[in-house]
Image (cartoon, rainbow, N blue to C red; front, top):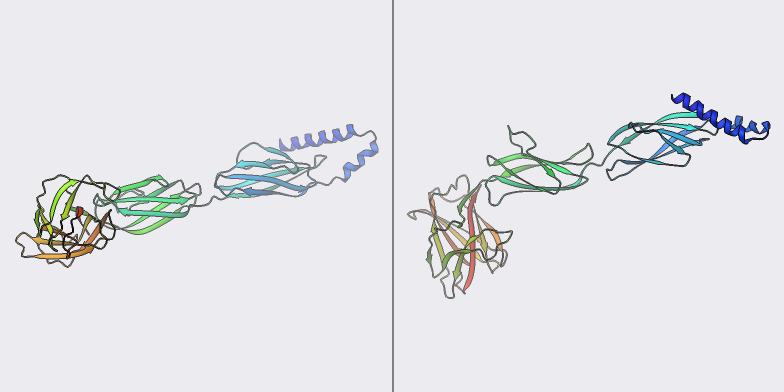
Length: 355
């Protein structure tokens, strides 16, 4: 069919030339028209992963071109100097170019077009243990040239990936067990190639000692300090809970002013030796002392931490790994330990143990 059409083109062109000439001697120039040669195509591939390719055929003695775009679409006819655009999926294509001269002689060549998309770049991953739910992690990933990302938890016996979402959207995943996992985030775009971020993820268990949400907490105050459960006066991203403890250290209160409360079950400091507490202090550098005691006070261990912000919630950490083994059920909290009271109000909330 292609050969027949080319013969028709050639015949039509010769007829046009004959009709346009008034003297048979004018037909001699047709014998001097060269067959198209040096046929090629210029491919301008867009770098935005759209698959847009601009194709410009070239050739000597070529008046027009026929292009088979190699993707099953219709044949395109272009005059010399013209271009066409086509959208391709990522892959390799054979572009057939047939060049015709003025009298219908033609030359056909094949050019290889390779469309490669850009893999996701600048992958940025934030993965953290949840502050409120034990053994839960929160992930968010961003990358250029990416549309989705996958989270591989690294758990054995669990189908992977465990979650997929749009790039920039968060993933929350609940592990069954605390521990260290070889986790992976895979960013996916229009390209066949992907971009990966791998890490050893430490999944922590949280054992709340007390979060004060359900009330029923009795405080033993000493040194003229006082504690009471109130509505959170500064609900924020750092501490959105409803109930917190207000500790007041009035003017003249002893340097050791504090409060004690008792929990129902002994703490597991063997498997979870880090105690964390959320505090709110108007002072930077105030010593917040935590003392743990067993029921008959035969065993006691204390650790200090200093506030690092003023008038906002922060989480302080205490290492109790060196504490003697005992059934600790009493918690003593001291604010601005070592200094007399100056009528300052402090707040604390959510005491928990982590590994």
